[in-house]
Length: 136
Image (cartoon, rainbow, N blue to C red):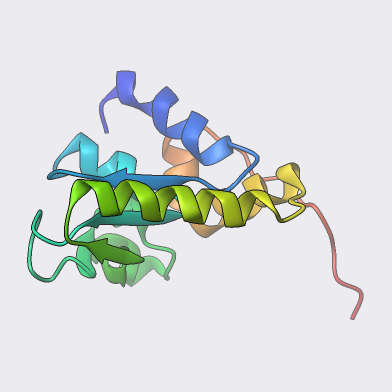
C-alpha cells in the first residue's frame, strides 16, 4: 500500500460510526480499497463485474488465518445493487437514516472494525485496544 494512502485508510477504519460506500460508478484500484474500508457497500447493478456480490479482496483485508492472509479471500462485499444512480443514492440515504437511529458506542464500533482487519490495521499503523474481557 502506498504510504500517502495509509492515513486515509486509517481514518476510515477509525471512524466511530458505521459507514456506507455508495458506488454510482466503477471502483477499481484505490477506489476499490476505499470502498472496502466501509461497513456497507451499495452500488449500481450495471457498473462493475457481474459477480459484484463476491469479489476477491486484497490480502490485507482477509480476517482469516495466515493461509487466507496470504491468498486474500472471496467475501461478500456488496449489500445491495440498484438499477440507477438515483436508486443507489436513495437506498444509501435510507440505510444512513436507519443506522443513525441506533445508539452506537463509537469507541467500541471502531475497535470492532479494526479488529476485523488486523493485518490492515497493522499496515496502516493502528493499534487494537481491548474494550472488554469476558469472564469465563
